[in-house]
Length: 168
Image (cartoon, rainbow, N blue to C red):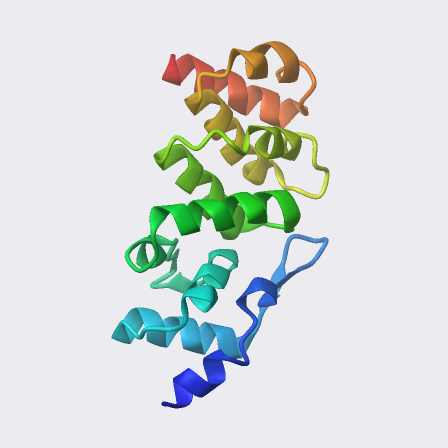
């Protein structure tokens, strides 16, 4: 009952605050509510669960991902929110990875332009750009190879070449 009341106060869309140095802080209320939902399979309002797409945390030293959301919410609603988030939200680290990996797993191409733009986003770390490369290579996007490969930074270029060699 207390979780039902508190979840209405939680803001999972803004629970993680990213700093320029790559570190972040996380709202403790959101961590607790998220943990209880996973641990005890609590049901929260659908809108709250969709907001949790912009949240991830660690259990046993590993990020959890979004499988628990996929079990509760329809593909169409998750896809719609992920596309919205990729277009309109500042995503980093595991949250960005969760979004792009979902698009890879489900062959979602509607976000191609947004993910291409991540290659040139100076606020993203190199490992965050790598998941964008994975998406583009997974799409077998020749445009990526022709248009972007020579324009990305050196680390992203090297990662891209290694990935192309092993994937093709």
